[in-house]
Amino acid sequence: MNKQLSAIMLLLMTIFIGFGIIIPVLPEIVGPFHLNMMLMLYSAVSFLMSPFWGSLSDKIGRRPVLLAGLCGFAVSFLLLGLAGDSLWLLYVSRLLGGLFSGAATSCAVAYVADITTEQNRTKGMGLVGMSIGLGFIFGPAVGGLLTGFGLSVPFFVASALSFVAFALAAARLPESLPASRRGEAPKRASRWTAFSGSLKYLYMLSFFVTFTLAGMEGTLQYFEALKFGAGPMDIGIMFLVSGIVGAAIQGGVVRRLVKPGDEAKVIMIGLLLSSAGFFLILLSSSLLTATLYLTVFGAGNALIRPCVLSLITQKTKVGQGVATGLNSSMDSLGRIAGPMMGMGAYHLNVNLPFAIGGTLCLAAISLLLAFRTADSRTIRAESAAR
Image (cartoon, rainbow, N blue to C red; front, side, top):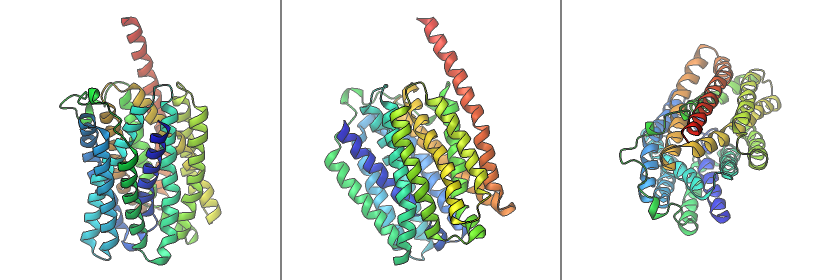
C-alpha cells in the first residue's frame, strides 16, 4: 500500500504542477477576458465529465480511467505549448485539459479511498492534499521561472511531466478495485446520488472554498501588480512560500495529528484562517507582505481540503468513485463561477473579490455546523434502529 500511495502522491503532484504552471503565465499571454473564459471553460468541462469518470471507474476499475486521464492531460498541455498566439488552439487545449483532468484527479482520490481503511483514511487524504499542495508549490514557481526562456516553455514542461506520470502509473499502479466490487455503484448513478443527507452540506462547503479560491486566482496577479508592481516571478514566489507552508501542514498536522472525529474542528479553524488571509491580502504593500498574507490563506485551505475529503469518503452511501467524482465536480463548479465573480467584482472595485472571499469563508461555517447537526441526527437514528 505504501508504494501505491507514494505513486499516487507523485501523480497528483505532477497533475497540479501542470495546473499551477499556468497561473502566472496565462495572464502574460491573454487579457483578463480570455484568461477567465479559459479558466471557466476548463472547469465547466471538468464539472460535466468528473461524475462520468467516477462512475466509469466504479464499473471498470480505476486503472484504465486514470491512465486515459493522464494521457489526455499531457496532450492538452502539448497543444497549449504549440498554440503560440492562436487563440482557438488555446481554447481547444483548455477544453481537452478539462475533459481529462477530472478522470485523473477523481480516480486518484478514489484509488486512495480503495486502499485505505476508515481509521487511516484521514492520513491518506492528508497525503493527497499534501501532493496537491506540492503541485501548487512548484507549479506557479516553475511557471514564473520558465517564462524567462519563453512563454511556451512552461507548457511543454507540464506536458512532459504528465507523460512521465502516465508511464509511472502504467508501470507501478495495479488495479485497486477488486472485480467483485466493480459495478457496485447504481447503474444510473449521477452526481446527485451522493448529494444527500448530511453530506450535501460538505459538498456545498467544498464549492464555496473553491469558488473563493478561483476568484482570487483570476484577479491576484492584476491586484498585486497595482499594489507593488508584481509580475509572473513575484506571483511564483508567493505561491511557492504559501504552498510550502500548506504542504507542511497537510503532511504534518493533518496526517499525524488529526484523528478520526476531529475533522470538523480542523475545518472550522481552516475557514477562519482562510477568511483572515483574504482580508489581510487587501493590506498588501510589498512582495513580503503579499506573500505572508497569501500564506495565511493557504494554511487555512490546507486544513480544510483533506478533512472534507476524508469525511466524504468515510460517510458516503454510494460508490467511492461517484462520491469523489461529485466532489471534483463541486470543485469544478466553483472554478466556473469563481472567475466570473472575481473579475466582475474586480471591475467594480479592485478590493471587492478579496472582501467577498473573506466574507464567504466566514459564512461557510454555517454549512459546517449544519453538517454536524444533520450527521449527529443520522447517527442517533441509526443507533435507535439497531
